[in-house]
Image (cartoon, rainbow, N blue to C red; front, top):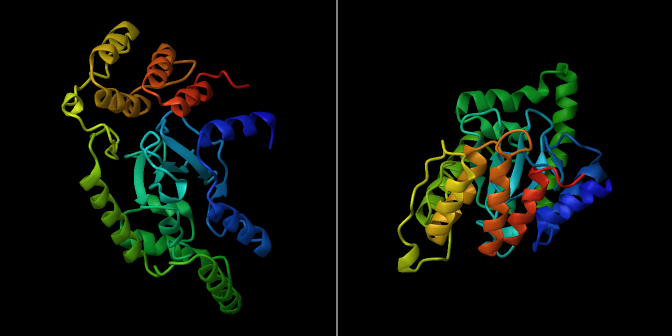
Length: 283
């Protein structure tokens, strides 16, 4: 890793430790020399402007900016092992989707699906078709041999990662739907990305969320909104900002400065440091 990649990874992780299971995944991949088993590569330094500030990225697919992250709900999650898993696909609609209740739950999808990007498919027939395409490049005899070898590999994988019981794409889609429904039951703050935020700021003063017109990019108006509204409304704004604005040096750059200031005021220090990644401060 370069010095820049190390710096970004430290910022992204913040107070969190890398889950032990991440190292197990690395060991499994290197031991079997099978770098396309999951269809993603592990990294903590991959972020797009649309990636929510409270997400810790951990993997990318190598195509169309698609990556995965731990949803921390602005630090409310105590451990990344317990954090919901989100897929971020900048060119898709919707670009942000909840796919698993935690990392171990996420790993149950493999190797039923051949490519992590398949989690963007919500049609059973299309998902089945994509999952079966792994064998298309082989002859009939090669398929027989490869399926035998693949079966042994799957057994090894499922012995290492407890709970990997899912064996059909139907179960995957059902599990994602169940995860999304469970999430809606605990969300306190609705957000533009439909993922929402869970917060422990539940007093009367913060119970009413004040909406904001995101067609406004005037930093004075944004500053006034953040100064006069309650904390839960600001949390909504922090999540929505990456979704509704283009937070980069070339577009809504001034919004980044306001965000960084107020994230610090509200005690979201990791997220305020993430702004340094978006504004180009880290070179």
